[in-house]
Length: 427
Image (cartoon, rainbow, N blue to C red):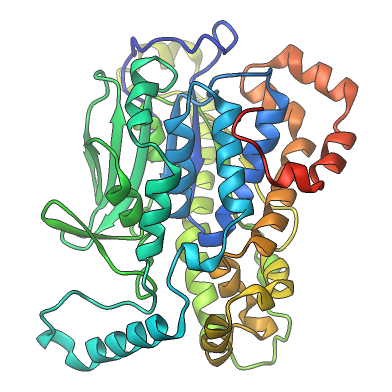
């Protein structure tokens, strides 16, 4: 990853941020239904900030399901609490049929098409089939996100850039589509490209198109799949777009012992194997990039300030704050498996996902409010537990001390109420 950024930027300063506050980038990675955890953390951040605060993140980068959350925030950057409340409303009332078709007829049709595609191989000329029909997700995005608001957020100075990453099946590159102020320039690195555009529903659908599960998305003359594929440096786009520090909301634990199978002697099922593949796509790459950035920071720290000032490459330390779930999400998913529609439960059972060793794949595909609400609560609790660090990171040092003095125990307790799980559009 490059430890450098775009040269000095003349974008408007967000009036809600403290004077001289650093330009913070927000990284929302992929993870399917696990992305509900990100919204819980964002809910905690919204609770910490003063009422009617604008977006504290100058650059917002989203991939896969994280692209949905990123677009929702960017479309309402002038009213951060309202943007988070709308995301809360969507995730806390979500059902699988809002993301993919779950009726028996549609499931059978998709399964037959997928099987026919496998048998046809290279002779198939029609659109590639997938196990699930993701048409409802596009309809959901149209209803819940005002994509014209992204441009308004940039023009008003509340946002520098929104970046949505997808993987091009045509070129094999990771394409970071960005919409931002006029000073930001496209970039090209090995297998990574930054491309300016006006972001809309097709870009988010492309970023969410998990291979085999959802069909590829077409933008112009290219076909795209899930953005987490080929995304070798998830933090890099935020740095190219001018972030001086980055806050990363992860959706999984990085420690290998947290991924041990409940029954280590059991032969791995298809779901168990698929869970490991999904972890490699959505979690491991981000962890490696964070470790790389930390090592670069350590190396730069050995260089004197005078030498750094004379360095034409502009190398500098990039501070990062990483927030992760404090509990295993696969265990939460296992306890909520019965919330899935009957047809999907049948498929998951045959796949081995209903067994303890297969619960990890469920944690990515369980788009049901029973599961999402637990992740929202966990994200909120984890965010409030890190409130002092988060506020200091955002440049609210004095506010952080005050929050610590008051405490947030009552905030976490009150969050469990039904009223808070059904947020209004305006707090």
